[in-house]
Image (cartoon, rainbow, N blue to C red; front, side, top):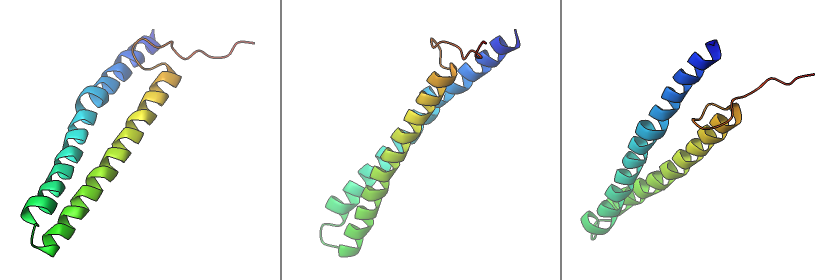
Length: 96
């Protein structure tokens, strides 16, 4: 009975991570990447300092995407392994 309550809370937390937190962080990384592209190509067309700033934003946007995708994959693997994701089989103790 207590495990059912734990599973309800864990499903809520996982849903918040999957459907609110991850898309918000992906949106921030995408906006950072777009700002870098805008700064590099449009604002920094004739200014080398602005182009370097744009390169840094582009680089950090791509790094952000890689970190987010890795984190998302780790959360997915952990939730499926532990049976915490809706629709997955619950974790069972070994029997002798």
